[in-house]
Image (cartoon, rainbow, N blue to C red):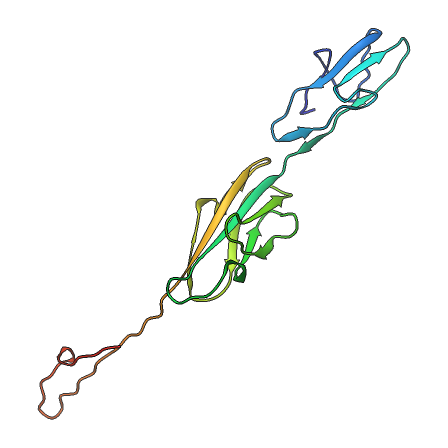
Length: 187
């Protein structure tokens, strides 16, 4: 009932026999966003045309398939502080919706991994992987996705440089008066 069907431009109800005059007729429908229509089938030609003689009872069919959503997940890894991880060392997970082929998969650099979603709605993308990396997520790594939409989530991991803290302790218990800054310390 969400789809408007027509015979010769006049609205009709799906599954109900409609009396028409003998001769050529054309079945059609009003397109619905986020659905892809097949060619006409049954007794109709692919373009929806049909010719009827007196007493004919014929049926025309069309199938509308919902257009899936796509979520593209891109993994960027920056190794500028001695790290050596690569994108595939991280496991990406799409939460709260269902992805064709599974919701968890190895990270991939640009163009990333294009996952077809078999359900839509609210979602988030998370990851697990090597320690020692700060992460940042683009705005489309969580939110809501609808039929026919394509969104791109980019997660960037940057290796964190190790740090050393040197602490100089000075004990002046025998009359000395030097402080920590009086000594040169280097790494």
